[in-house]
Every structure is written in structure tokens, then in C-alpha cells.
Length: 123
Image (cartoon, rainbow, N blue to C red):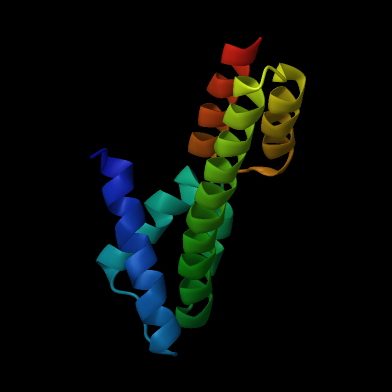
């Protein structure tokens, strides 16, 4: 398991807890975790720092980080399956389009790298 996977999982657990426990404040360690992972999902340091100034906006940031992880993962998985099916049937143009469409909307660098690697393989 890569370190970011472990951290991402913890942010997702934290976001779930914060959604259940409205008004819960983040500990220093939780703020550090959210700050670090926010950067990994393309949220600027400045935006993260602003959000972490209050309990409510800190919780919203954790939820947004979790959403980007979850939705980006889903988009990537679906695109890879679709691209693979097109590629297997010999339609590499359609496979490339699926991956390019994903790159047009995806913001999480890790997911973008995976999609770009797959797209490069189809070239």
C-alpha cells in the first residue's frame, strides 16, 4: 500500500465521521492530514489553509477531499473499463476518446497520470 492510499482512506473515514457529527472540530493531526491530502487532490495550499481556519469549513474541506477521491476513482475505473472494451474490439479511436474525455474533467493528479499512461499506450 502506498502512503497516499493510507492517508486517503483516513480522510474518507474522517469525512464520514464529520458528516455524522455536525459541528465536530478537527484535531491538529486531522488538520495536518486534510492539509496534506488536499494538496494531493489538487486543492491549493492557500484554499486549504483558509478552509482549516474554522470547524465548519474544515469539515467541508475534508468532505470535498473525500468526494474528489471517491468520484475521481469511480470516473477513472469506468473510463478504463470502457476504453479497454473499445480497444479489445479494435476501436482505439473510441478508446482514446474515452480517456481524453476523462482527462478533460479529472483534477486529481494521480488519476490523471493513470489515464494519461493508458492513453499513451493507445498511441
